[in-house]
Length: 392
Ligand code: AMP
Ligand code: MG
Figure (cartoon, rainbow, N blue to C red):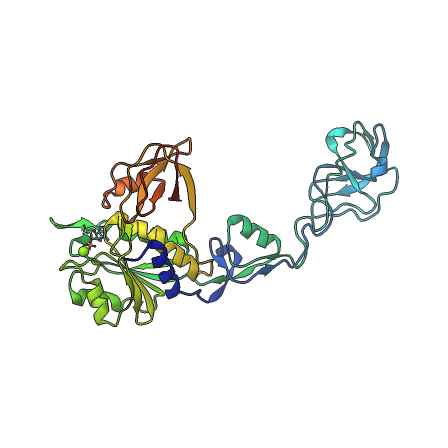
């Protein structure tokens, strides 16, 4: 059995970054920028007032000064003229600073009488001016690769970048296997259950930036699984769920094998998730996940998300870990890396659930972290630190 790190390295070796495509900026949130985007203008494009008030020369910004108001500058409407000594221009936030002025006095510090103003207590130290290019200059870039956040979208919009080059979303074919499964909303027979982790994985993959395609459930016959594999054409990654162990009805490796599977590994020293399989099927990377709902989703967090990120051109690295102190003592761990459902308390301590059966989705839904016990981890005391994966 290989370690989680070895399995992840083998998986990274099966995938590579996909090609890029051009999309409209407003469709680019959450996508991964494939090519640096460059500002085509300065922001602000002119020095601008950050307050409503009066623009003047700083030499005139003195207590008791009386200035003549010679015009107005509003956002979108500059004042065409020059502010001379003894003069001021009424100005509003976002308006270009008039020539000659290098200070804006806020209106709260000014008494106006007709076209005259008197300065009460000027804020000499605060010019209330946003200088040209103070945010970014022409040629400044947003570097790739980078997953675009709403703030990035606003920044790129401000740079007047209307289209960006992003990595194509990996198409992931999801095949659930099992005679016992029906899809949510269907009526299960007396011995049937609802396929649950299928939709959980679909959600997880979408959030990671992939384009999951849920295929019809494959029954536990070679023909049904063969026909499911035929539907994977065009996918960048095939993910099967269940049927990965060595039982009589576990057909994924047998059927994939008969279709030319080149296996990279089978079985990983982890809990839950041991019967994980990976390889290539007709040139397409394939991952066989265990069917137990929690196993499948834990493998999703530990393996699928990092390889989707790698396919998107993001760095090929394990899921980000945090460290937190244990809220209680724990016994020693066995020979497999254990991903344990846990909650981070308000004090930041990890409370690891007592029950860890890999079928219990209710506990996974309540968990906000997976505490990680390395293989053969000795007993731990409350207050000792453990690594964890955050479940968002
Ligand atoms: P298997 O790996 O096929 O032996 O499945 C292990 C356990 O997970 C069995 O109890 C299955 O009924 C269950 N299981 C398999 N696939 C799914 C699925 N897509 N959703 C929910 N449970 C599943
Ligand atoms: Mg099965």
